[in-house]
Length: 322
Image (cartoon, rainbow, N blue to C red; front, side):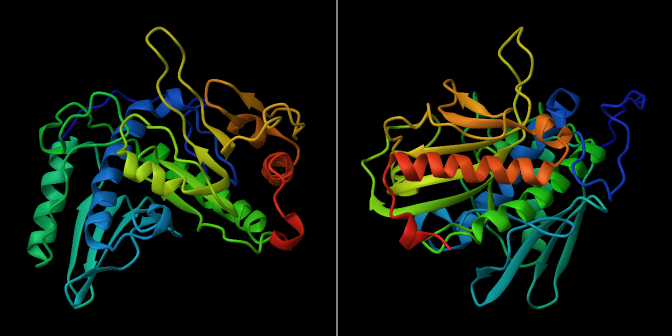
């Protein structure tokens, strides 16, 4: 399906960026429609991974992972064969492959969620690897079943690629932070429900049952937060309320359960703060990328907010840290 688009003027907000730029600009208002569509495409692929893999603690079997070209499901068992699905944001294709040499390619371009869903399910059928999923989005307001969604259809390759590049750089810095911890710690992975890249440290203590969350079954929420955590991540933002500006991308850090004094604990850098609406510390992405030392600023944020959680909740830091 061809979608006519108005010519895009190259401004500071949307000018093409070089692949060598470390932290590209990612104003949510410049790619809001693409971000929403991409989130729904990711949910379809993520639900395929969820359908094919056995449950792993904290829902770690459902996540996607950054690659040198995009995002991947990693290998998934399909009977005695193996299936893998990859988003390639360099050549802008979706690649489905099987362990016996089967391949199917879907070009990534403006198309409705319904068409993406139809093409992907047909591709899996053609590979002899059919998968059936619950075909309704989660963690979104007013979800439209995938097969019926003719509304969301934007795809700006420039901003899809920028988003992937931010994920790669975030994974790079998060890996440095992750290596400082010897206790249980999650992989660095993308949760497709909210489209955030996250990494979580565990104190080892059991947590109280987590309150219900909109768009998620209690069994999922209570598995994810079964134990005391300090979690950090990157979120690309979202449309604002009617008449309000978009919520721009930020790094976040939160503790569950939140210990007394956590929100008031001193953190760094100066641009970071506790956001009571989100219930977590946030560091605006744009403030980080514009700083003199973006990597250093992000590591400061990760370390100081973890220390807020660990100190206020009296974690056994000597036993858990390198």
